[in-house]
Length: 454
Ligand SMILES: Cc1cc2nc3c(=O)[nH]c(=O)nc-3n(C[C@H](O)[C@H](O)[C@H](O)COP(=O)(O)OP(=O)(O)OC[C@H]3O[C@@H](n4cnc5c(N)ncnc54)[C@H](O)[C@@H]3O)c2cc1C
Image (tube, rainbow, N blue to C red; front, side):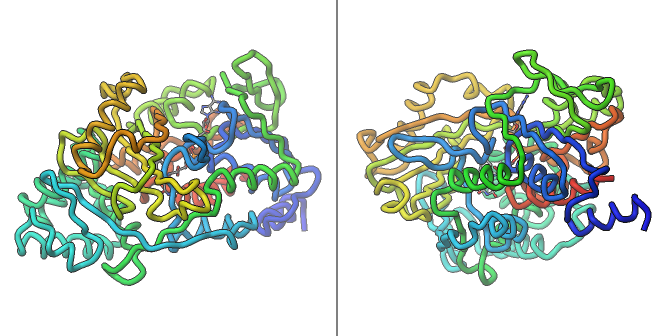
């Protein structure tokens, strides 16, 4: 076997590469994508340094403290169908720590909280006529069975949903839900978005339209990330925290990473996992044709409050909100799933997300203003809730959360391999036929590493 074929065989096995083929890699971004890429690279025998701008690992999946509780900064669950994530958890030795539960779903519409957790409740959901409900149910079932997402990508989500559910159901049911996740960006979103969303939720239900089964690792992502860090370090990876990368560019012999304090490090190769607009700024020497697709990806951001409460609000994990006076777009009551006595100090933990475009006023509101308006809305929505129930309130703001799947999105993807020798760019913009979730992120890393190794 010649050198390159033995190397290819070793790579295919995922085993160590021959000494001559070992490279020094930098991974920019210590979110789940960067960490999974780092793991795949060290498993292949490369030396890896991860540069994470924040003081802790995890990015969108990182953990933080709310009052005396440490839990995820943004609500996270794993589904039984998340094969890539479940297999990563097994690699990290955490599969035995998964805890599973069944959750209920609510809708807050016209000032009333409705349970829509099973078929009977769904059929009783008042704002729709019996015919509307049949068409709605058929749309969801049909969407979950479609396999050719490329065809859906050519149509606007508004057109597709109106065609299948009817214009009244689109206006009263789908539009508030689309607006809650996409704001006005729903107008430029393709039908592939709703297809990916309903498919994932459908997969979460253990039998058709019955109950949802969600899981989490005991200790939350704080535990997952601590273990991920240990495993990477045990493979020799270096994890540089609080290391904000200012630029990535060619060096005489390899690639140079410059940090915001002007310290530089040289590597054979670098993979940048930050959101596309950030990547376009960080990587020096990208041609116009390469930069434009990165700059052209439209993102939704988020303002998400973690609220620790003395007592629960309701029995629903997710409550979707269709009333537009409510300043957040859903209520996620984590403590309906997570064992509150063991993990949450006996308290209720609620997330109040509001997905945002960069121009939304809420992105510049102070934490106190957000707290005042969110708590006032809870008071109006839940008669038993009192502001005195709030033990702690913390606000997370992220400008780039997920790329909007616009019409024919997959035809405008930024490239993974750049024209700057040794520099690669992989991020959530490369998830073309799914919603943003850790399972997709891990799958993306597993696939992308094959391109990095070419
Ligand atoms: C509200 C919310 C709810 C979610 N719920 C779920 C769920 O229930 N289940 C699920 O599976 N997934 C969920 N997700 C999605 C999940 O969080 C993502 O799929 C995943 O975290 C994406 O990881 P990433 O590494 O691609 O991106 P990120 O986490 O954004 O990682 C990018 C990293 O790059 C770092 N960085 C940026 N600029 C620089 C720089 N210049 N130098 C160095 N580092 C830099 C950032 O600090 C960050 O750590 C949710 C996300 C959100 C926001």
